[in-house]
Image (cartoon, one colour):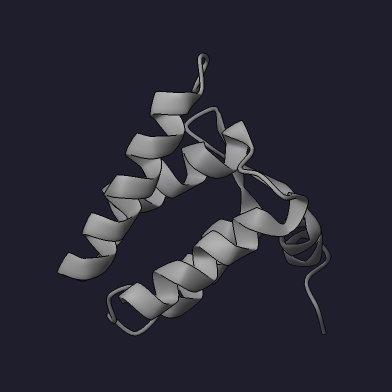
Length: 99
């Protein structure tokens, strides 16, 4: 039997962690990658970034979520560099980056 609260949680677009709103699907995808102690590789990182591009641009919530992933998930050296560069570029071009 499916837990109704769990189902609602997985269907939500957003997830709050410490009163900060993040992209639930992006976090769920990252969690599934590192589920068994794996690290997020460059290929995995591109898949996460592609998820963000569904609307044609990065939203503030997506950038905040990628920043959270960078700080709280195990990344390979290459994916860490890759994500760091993307976050730096996005924050450099956005006047009000709320990451």
